Structure formats: C-alpha cells, structure tokens
Length: 239
Image (cartoon, rainbow, N blue to C red; front, side):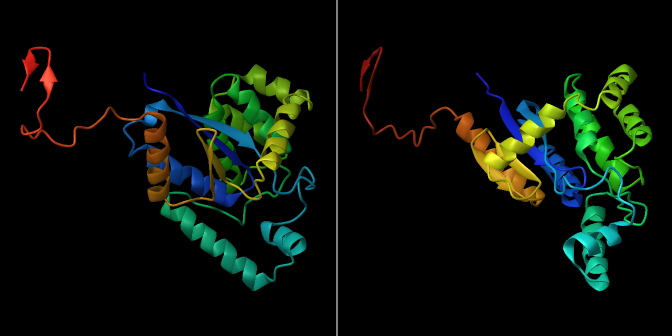
C-alpha cells in the first residue's frame, strides 16, 4: 500500500527566503512522480515576535535598527535576495514592503487549514507582503489576502474579530520549532524524521524527497540476474 509522505514546513511570513524556498520546493514537486502522495503542512514561526503590529519605518530602517547593519550592507543584501527571488519568478518590492508583526497573519494561516486552504493562504500572505505592498499587521489588508486565498468571509471575520482565535495553534508551532532546535527558517521536516534547513536548491529537494520516499515505500526485490546455470527447484520439479 502506498504511504503518504508528510512534509512539515516551518516558516515566517516576514522571511524573504521562505517564499523563495516555497517556490523551489514546489518546482521539485513538479519533477516527482509521487508528488500527489506528499502531504504539506505549514507551521508558524516568528523571526521577531517583539515587532509592533505595524513598524513605523521602511525595511531598511528596520534592518538598520534591529540588525545594526549599515546602509550599503542592507542595499547589497536586499539586492541579492531580490535577484534570487526573480530567478523563481517572484518580484520583490522592498520599497513598498510594510514591516509588521506576523502573529495575526499566522492565525489566519491556521484558520485556513480548517477549510483546506492553508497552501493558498500561505501563498497569498507571502505575495501580499513581499510583492504587493500589503500590510500583514492590519485587518483591512489581511481581509484582502484572505479573500485572494478563497477563505470564507465569515471565517476571516471571526478570526480578525477574536484576537485569541488560533493563537494557541501559533504558539504551539513556535514551541515545537524550539523543541526541534529550529534556529532559522524555512525549515523542512520530512516524514517526521529528517530535517532540512534553508531555501535549498530545487535539485536538493528532489534528491532528499526521493530518498525519504523510497525509504518509506521500498521497491519490491529486484532480481540481480537470470543466469540459467543457477539450479533451482520449482512446483514442477528441480533443474
């Protein structure tokens, strides 16, 4: 019987490499004959839980303040990540990006999972944050992203109205990440057994997913040779 391979992905909406890693992972799935048997589960992680709902400054301001980086270093870093994003078809716009606390967007991600829309919600949040200049810290923009993902409006409104809704699920994910000693995202857990850190190249995803899949679904015994000189007995007698 064919098994299902669970892939648990820990990532933050505010992580540019998480979106790039998502695209590279998806490109790997397109190359796998068993992709339909892979069950992707998105999990929450926060790079900076201390951020206000919406930060009063640009991405460069935030990086200068929180990381102590100088202007030239930040320009180089953002240009580099923008280039990598473009390689997988993403158009990052750091000039329009709204720096914000990602906690409430993660609550919507968990809500989306209850209606089978976690993948769509994750995509919409990342696209809204990095490409479209939407603010993941405001209810109005979260409504836009939820609508794009196809969430029922009553579900969206209930989550935005009740700030405690799915908050425990977000915290549980963060606690699990700590227990797994996840120190950066994206982080992939394959088959609840193997960890893979970072936005790996597509080729690496193909290789490791294939290896873990074959371990979980071993092939029938392969005959090494059909040499007739090796005598044997069968139902009709012996050679």
